[in-house]
Amino acid sequence: MAPEECIAALGGWEGYELCGWRQERRGEGSWCVLRLRRDRRRPAYCSGCWREAPALHDTEWRTVRDLPMFEHAVELEIPPVRVACPHCGPKLELLGWLDPYARVTKRLAESVSRLCAVMSIRHVADYFGLNWKTVKNIDKRALERRLGPVDLKGVTVIGMDEFAIQRGHRYATVVIEPARKRVLWVGRERSREGIRPFFTLLGPEGCSALEAVVMDMNGAFEQEVRAQAPQAQIVYDLFHVVAKYGREVIDRVRVDEANRLRTDRQARRLVKGSRWLLLRNRENVTREADQVRLKELLAANRALMITYVLKDDLKELWSYRHEGYARRFWNGWYRRAMRSRIEPLKAFARKLRAYLPGLLAHCRYPLHTSVLEGINNKIKVIKRMAYGFRDDEYFFLKIRAAFPGIG
Ligand SMILES: [Zn+2]
Image (tube, rainbow, N blue to C red):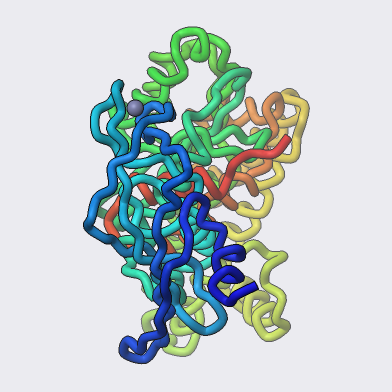
């Protein structure tokens, strides 16, 4: 077999044959340029309607990137072939290995999108020597094709969460199906109007099938769910309540304590630098030095000790599966909070009491908060990898792709 035939056979550019090749240096890299011409004996098919049509041969050549070969980047020079379709008019020929108007072959596009699942756009672009915009568009089209419209049949329990696109400026909402760890929908905004399109997509039948909606204590989400699916039980999830406790109680008590210790510089510094230590789950404080610091900190500060212990205890509320017992536990917790004489804690407990039905509903709809927390963390990773390019649609597709669902 002649070398050209060998390359043509390995290349597999169906309908085309190799008619020349050359090697070039471009900057740092070596390029292999393959010239292909169409096999005139082959029938041509219209890319619009997939029907056979007489081929017209254009004379202009265009270049298309293919997968690299050995250490060489590969570029194909091909004459685009149009068909004179009686149904569609002049159209590009349908090819199995190249989409109409694409600048890269299908297999290169596939490799790009596969790598984009685990690497940043910039790294993939560097690796293939492609422009980052090209890489992003390839991945975006691949995701659109792969994900398609979401199937909302049989969805009865959903979770809603917000996340920052630009902290303090723009927020978005993600709707998930916790049981299947599936992202159902991502939309701009976190307002009632912003999340309404999801309920429109779900339709009246889907809305009336909703049994429970797990969420943060967020007024807008709750109001919209009550309007769209009044029968659905609102459930507040542990992850958000504990995060809120951290912000509204622990952080404030810590600042108050630091102010109180104005004259004792060393104690003040210990309290001020303890934010991370106090907000972390106790089981995640694993270094011995940190454990000792935490112990000393709590032993020396009554208010911090109480707020810390009550945080740990509050989490237990989500371990109950029986509402009666959960309510009794809550009453005990509430009494301790109110007797603490710590104002931020009392204010939080009072606020939480107003949400009690949604807290206790967790007994009937136990959701592992690791689902929401995991999605939250993953979104941050995706943002670092795929964002910076200011394309919300692409960003949201990446989020959906990361949680395609199990089972
Ligand atoms: Zn046609």
